[in-house]
Length: 146
Image 1 (tube, rainbow, N blue to C red):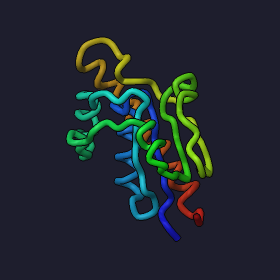
Image 2: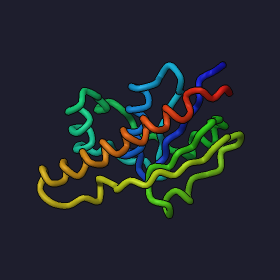
Image 3: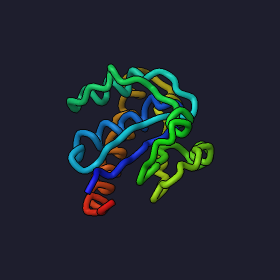
């Protein structure tokens, strides 16, 4: 049995999808092969880097990637999971051979306003929500045979 291939997608690949990728790699890289990408790749959000560093995960050297490049390369996934709002998720291309497409809606840390501490607090909430969803996903799908 091979690993379950997962792609996390959001708009810029700068926050939510990066966190989801990092958590799944940390928690279950023995069962899952995971990547992340965006519709309009940007730059990793520095407050997301800070929030992930607080819990011992360094994503500061990650690069943002384009979902359309992955599509053009013909990459195959068992799961394509959007971690942005439903309207943005509709922009995701249909990958051939995808077994399941999921949508997890999380607030975009790039949209947060306020002081550094206020934005970081809200970013932590998104981080923790993503981790909880990843744990649920692992429990539900780790025994699938592909």
